[in-house]
Image 1: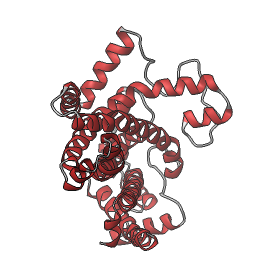
Image 2 (image 1 turned 180 degrees about the vertical axis):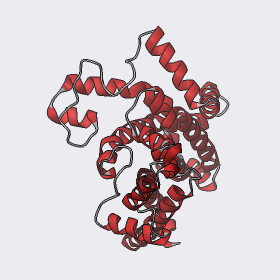
Image 3 (image 1 turned 30 degrees about the vertical axis):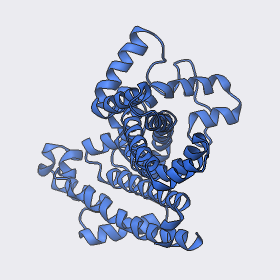
Length: 337
């Protein structure tokens, strides 16, 4: 297992280096002109201002020089300065990223808690009522657009039925907890501020469920399909012939093998949620990374675009590393291949 982990960590270093190059190319491949975006359409009439802007943000240097300057800043733990906020991008990300991680993690937990047991039971009770419910959940989850579901949920459960709290991370009368991690639920619990904890947790439920809907549908479908395939294997027929209880066969022999495709889906989905929660964060006024990335793209704030792309790429790579390690734990044959 140690050799397997070492190989995966070596690939992680190569992947991160590739992420830096892709981040740089994406930020500079945007067809919009950053000078026009930030100085306005009349910029061409003020050449001295344009030249000063190019020198300040390094646009007067060749691309390869800009790339190595970007790498040099990364080695010092810096991502540059945002043109919009005029602050260090690392400080901007430290302010926005925890909110997105907290929401995305909640969504994945909802999808895992509901989708996996539902898929397992649907496979065991094939063509029964639970199986029909699982199919319906899968179909709804993967079919309904997130922005539509978010809008309808907010209007129905908050504005009409008053079952949930409103948009944002906290209620209007609640102050933010002392910053420790940036995750309001954790910071409030550590501070012993249970009123803030309840407010932060309640504000996670509706956007978390909306964001989890598509992942939940995929997890249910993949788990059901994988379990059906595993339950038909010969070694499980042998176990049944030996008289083992069905619950023990499912829990100890079938579930572990059936989990590998589900782990793959969850890993990919978590990376996708981190980078694709823009609509949910906008509709629920959630101050997360998606909104920051959207504002950076609209104003062509290329240093911020590079920073956001790099951080999301690194997080995606780390999630894939965790998925690879889980593969090795679930199926030892993978370590030796």
